[in-house]
Image: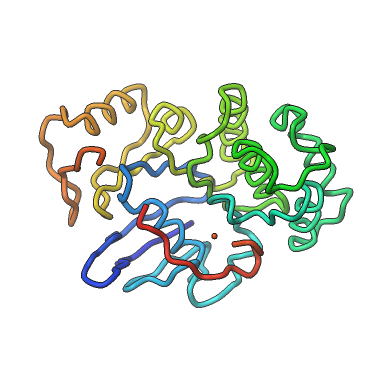
Length: 266
């Protein structure tokens, strides 16, 4: 289980995240949505100990992430291309991640063979460096690398962006399988309401760094979110400590030794 308590992040006088309490059970497919600047990437960065909280804490399977690195062996993520090592080929990168996670080349190859359809013949055996791949293919490599080592927690920031429709469909199946059949806790942020409602059993909406909705996904969820973000939702009582209004739409090279960086409050 992942627990955030009294969690805030401030830059000067600006509060970019303010979460009083959030619990994510083991094995849940969890979606995080919100406009630009809502605090999604800030939350993930705190969860990965890329930045330090101003107050509060995040506990990942009984480990406080800013006090111990014991969460790293069972947690994996792909946030953006800064997580890649551009001067390596995809194969070299996968084997490198495998070494960090105690897997040999045979183990890594066995895993990669499960994603041949997802790679669509564009990743392996191309004799290209990661830096020379398209944005979409870089994302494919980063996402699959996050599955190496059988992590218990997988964190994906905007995983559907830059992917073609076929790959998006395949990724949705992968995410569903991880949570439903393998008991992996999967956290996904996305601007695409359709995709996130299709793969996540629970969706939390952030606005101005605060939780304004916490929804168990149903057949009505997409309509509810569209009304909410379109500004047409009937006024409702906010969650405790949250602001019910929403504004209109206005990097870990070494995954086991995370360098700190300050996000832009996405």
